[in-house]
Image (tube, rainbow, N blue to C red; front, top):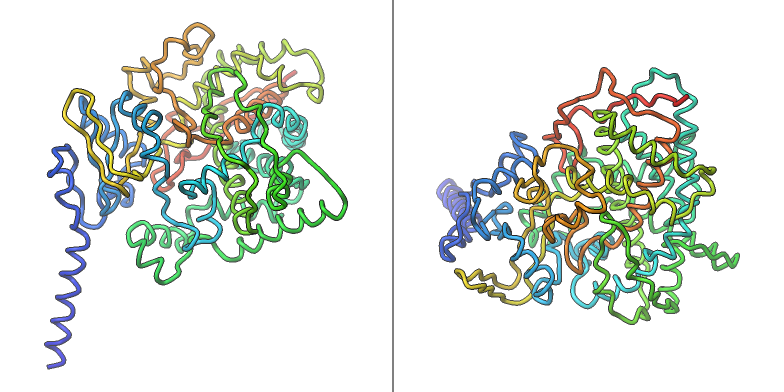
Length: 523
């Protein structure tokens, strides 16, 4: 009898699991949308999880399979997702009809994780609008100008560290840049002087390694469980963010705020904004539409809100965590791939060096306007972002039922389902960028960039929910690259992987064999 009950229970559990996993199996068939058949429970993520393909290779393979389609289907594990393959549809959904797609499909909310769930990326609806409006003053041209010398000091620390070593040292520039960017974010966001080069075991470095680590099996397992079984994880209170690092960021934010209030200190950084927001005294900054070059194109039109709401400590700490993680990963990815490309294309590097030399003044005196005036530097950064976008895809969650009919068969999506834009695929589509695998900054020179199809280039996302910190990331990258190239030539070394093969074991954009180069002192 007991054996019968055990077998019956097991069969019942298997039936329930099968029904749960296949609940949406006919989703695309019923809508007449082409799609690739999913693997049980894994959806279309199988090649990535079994390390048969990189995330961007999997994305590109699907993009090519459905050439000619406006949209096609994709399974995020068991969840059906519509991928937009037509730029007109992208603009319609992400910009014109933004009111139907105002949120990200965040894996956690504030009830599930009080830190990650309260970050700007995860916030939804009116709360997102208010938080974005509150944070946007930090990223205006006026505020970025003030941060230039702060970033400059960190770049000087980087160069002094490299100069101490022998000429034939091989550098993994991704790791080297990580130290510099920990200092940058410590200074510009938290007002803390971090000495990552002389004290590599400091709190900020440990936090950065934790946030960016993809080899922690427990962290990866938690993430996969949240993606596959979000409701069950919520019931059991499973959080993605380790409590140890929650305490660290809470302490950093609260102690810095307390010290500033006690000593009457004011700095143009994230902590100052958070301090004013907590008091309910934050004033909107109207300087949010500054014109700039191709890499800095930005949508600042959604910054509507009073900025007067008061926020609790976890909501404020969450913004510091997101700024730390996003700023660190985006800029280190951008710079490390740029340096690899410059090592492989010495003629481009020499042309850029010649432009840098036109600013014949001490580095400490370089201004924001002067960095912005370097058109070829902007073109190199823009081309690097095209070929190696730190964010290969972006998503939106449908917040109310939506139908698009542009004269061809209708595309419909119900509330709570999501759409993706495969940024990497558009950037590598020869229809928009001829010879897409060639690193060619001239695509973004003063005359040529006007010929790029609108919305085909979107390294920081598209529409009102694009990356709020893009201007800061670009300024930081330009200042660091400017300083490095002034003192060093980037050259290939024996460890350099000239094929630039992406890693199959990491979810972010990084090379399988590392970002190894020589940094040779200039005469």
